[in-house]
Image (cartoon, rainbow, N blue to C red; front, side, top):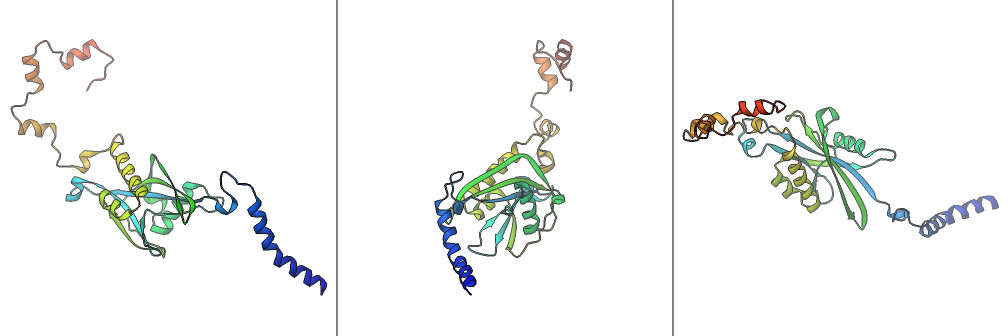
Length: 236
């Protein structure tokens, strides 16, 4: 009986001792054990609207935002907390599949973009990391989990309006700017109405051609002259 009472006393006292020890522990990386940074990762999924759709002529890029089914029901890209032993990108891929039904074979990660946000939630520090990913098939179906009640594909301005938080709005703008500055971005496929050189000459017959320039400025070097004087220069 005495043994049982001793075990019971230790069990009751143990939580108090644990709390005292935690309070006495020195900080680690600037945070105490009870204040460790909460870490989450996700993907900013975008798609390019197919040519021929009127909206695509002005802005072919749409971002995917999900609306949570809890709390204030805010809108964010798919993201979630990092599990123990899991690396950040693996978390982003897992959460995207769990929350939006989009597996890794449905999109391509865009090289060179990684955005880290640091803020406080309920007075506790939180870090969120986003990568950028393009949906390979714009018609791929989004399948929500129980954590979300709605989703939308939105142009930049609309996405920023729903996002609400300034840091997420800035992240979406940075992603959009990054996509526009990528080398090899094919504007002609998304802007089929953009005039070609042939169109410009046909609509503006008074505009000088290369032939006119050479005839009026005989001393100006021709493409032939440039190639002959600079044999290492790339030809057309």
